[in-house]
Length: 385
Image (cartoon, rainbow, N blue to C red):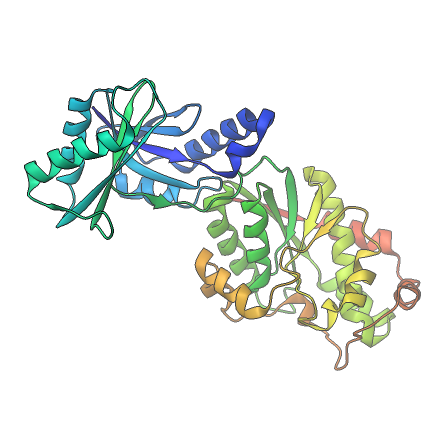
């Protein structure tokens, strides 16, 4: 009899011929997530992943970390034993003795159809044994505890707690993206949603120090650390942007400034994306949330991009985004006061419907290649865990 974690996936199991690739990546990500917790081995089976434990493994910490691993549908701390009804009864009793309850129900799933008892017969035998040994009563409709018995060809697994995972896909199976991380509420949520879809996130942040304070820098590193729980080791590229902004202010019409900031950020981000082999940019933009995010303005920003710009929050309102930020743990950091670089030198009446011709004309006096090169020459890189 062995105590271990039995991990189950949903979407990964639907990947057909690519399933093994997804399973291997999920197993590797579990190893990364559980570093330092006292796990012994991660074993990949055909229908689940097992985490074997050292004698002094930190069970509570392992549970908390597995909750954050993208690709896990649910998991349980289970007893693995022989496919023998007596052994199954003993393991079930051991599991029930670890919980406090007045009523129980046994549910059996038998994938090994050669096992001599049917699933209802196993549930009846194990349930009768537990009632006799513990004195608890049976309740088929609203039990305090459900004892799950899963019988496979090689082993039986017994558990009393099914813990919900995040779901989604294992990080890394969907390629790499460069996330434009502002330090506000939206962009960390956009990053998290892409990570959940299996993308490895690299981050870029534009800052205007010394014209603004260092709060945005500190917040972005802290947010990247929170996201690293699911994204694992993360890289943040920091781009000084104040001098470029001053050039735009001195050389272009005021109503277009924010849009021109965004276009320059996009050009710089594309160059960084090429450096790190990212296939797309990701932003936290939501349709019509602010002036630069009208449909027309989003189009004029995207017009100069040569790789896709993904906007996972485009159809969500602020309340929905805030709820997700609170759930993933970035909200409190994001709402600490800071001066965003796009708020520097912002005009009183920003354009809400600038045309491509207007922006192209506004940029005609800028030496775009030199400005981008200067920004990249001052690029800083930080790695967070």
